Image (cartoon, rainbow, N blue to C red):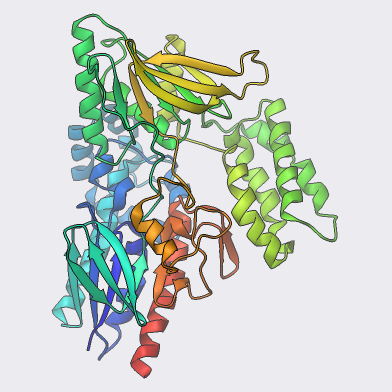
Length: 518
């Protein structure tokens, strides 16, 4: 009898768990599996960042060599070489003038197969990984050792039935399975404003970049700005959060609404008050040393807090020398990375749960294709950055009023507020203790199926990557854990997802073969 496994969420963590799992299955003569892949969208095996919800005109935030590691990178590049003509045409058809510029500027490079330094369209990777999984599925289906069921529904609850599970869906149906892999991606976005907009000529609120889909959000923004433009009204846009999503929204808006034709201006709000960095200064990189981290190498015992404090001091030193994150990130990361093996298990957990992300927030980098748009806006005096923490959003006669608490030590004002016509929420996700956490996740915690670890953004797992017996965890909800010899403070990174998913696949396969042996 086939073992029934449900994958809750169909992004790349699921894909990279399935690829080695299905490869193992292909070598077995008698084993069989029945898979249920559950996702509320149509982006099966691509996930949100690389599927339809992100659209077909956004690029990777990293160049290819930093986005994906070997041996997967070479395999992906070979696929790109075979498929680039059709992919590039599709990219141009769905993008604006920035998409055409990308193809024009990079055509000579990718035609030679030189992909490593390129920031490629994200949907290229989504198309690739989808094909990788589907090819394996079809091969095993033809051997009658695998059946796959796609369930486009939202899961609302999981209950334990002995060592197995019953999954409940939003349409009232349910499904019984032997094992479950929780692979739902990042936690939901923070809910900042839930009231209906009253004056739809002056105010538009985008509650998250990707929930309904990037293209649908862009259609709303374009329609709103064009209607104001017809009345010769300027449009002030606030992007809450200076992260990858925030940069992406600015890029997309300017791609669809050229600066020469529309009266748009932008402000971003973030606590650090700086945009990601994209320029590596090779000369400064040669001379910069993380002196505070190096000093710790002589200590006999170390704590996570000491490493974190040293890293922050070295980032401060870099900033005082006008060395940006793109130049210092590799040096500082190597510096604290060399110290982590000297921490005991408890201190490693502390670093993963409390300190890693704090350092990462000060080391954000992005490609110059995105940052050049911000530079162009700045030259036209149509971009500025507010250094502060979001406090409140409310509608008034001018549009939407954003209130914030200043984090700028040079500012005399502690509280600030400003009116905007469009506000885009890119502030990031809730944590697992938040009041507005989804009922599904609240239920997993309340029923004891999953326990938040101290990071509050990931679930505790055992050495088999189970939150509880036969309930495995994949992707971003692994944050704050040690897996084999590595610790993870976040998994918003393809390299980390591929590595952790490969380990999960081994553990999942081991649990299947143990069952067969019984």
